[in-house]
Length: 217
Image (cartoon, rainbow, N blue to C red; front, side, top):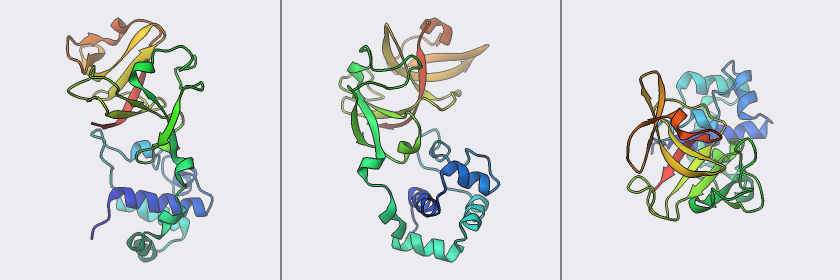
């Protein structure tokens, strides 16, 4: 049976933690870019998990001093899954969409703060990303892209690119989700709710654009 990409990454992470490596320190030790093993680099634009390349995997296993055959056995037995942090260590802040505009929900940098946030188990491995959070849809304002009861994982620290799904919000602004599009001289925004494509400047001052990395409908 062919393992899933997430199983490969979880096994690498578990073996790395056993030896005191973080994703960044392991990547550097393997001669890779410091962000090469970050969870944000493991997901394609559609939200699917990316397979690690064989050269990357071999470099990592060399640093960990784990033979490829032993690594395959770990995957077959799902042994390292026993040392993945429990749910308490994999929680993300979570909030209903309708509450995003409340005062005290985000700090001056647009990062989640305050006691109103709930906690829920992170889908995938986004719990390793600083300031990642979940927004749960509690209405039909983003249909048909997102239905009532669906949710998104948002990672503020990730750079924005053409084609990214984003959450736009800020003090005094109604939160909205949509797509970034390259048109003319720069990026433009198109809401999931439809309507005209508009330049980012038209969204007004004091808004934050946070990249959506995963959606559940």
